[in-house]
Length: 134
Image 1 (tube, helix red, strand yellow):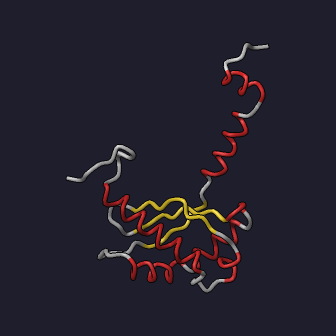
Image 2 (cartoon, rainbow, N blue to C red):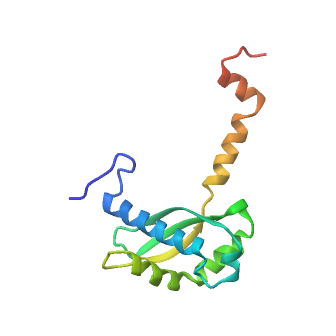
């Protein structure tokens, strides 16, 4: 029997906790500049979320370079260094299995910006403000 959270009823607390541990360890690796890759070290990379599969074999890491610059190049460099980063993360986690890292671009920032732009359009802002239609 697994414990469920109100935030995400489909995931156990254990999976969420391990995902957060992987996210923190990965973010630390990227900010400390320990990855020996010029492309990665040239960019500030945000790790917004890590989703771990129920069998703990795979961690899908959602990343975004600051400003969205060179996304394809950064993603390629992260994928090329994923095995080394997995080994470094294994040293920090207290789990029997360290998941393989799969990197995906996080498009939630773009979706949020799109929604914000829609909400700021004059006719939507007028409706939200409770003003009378013209």
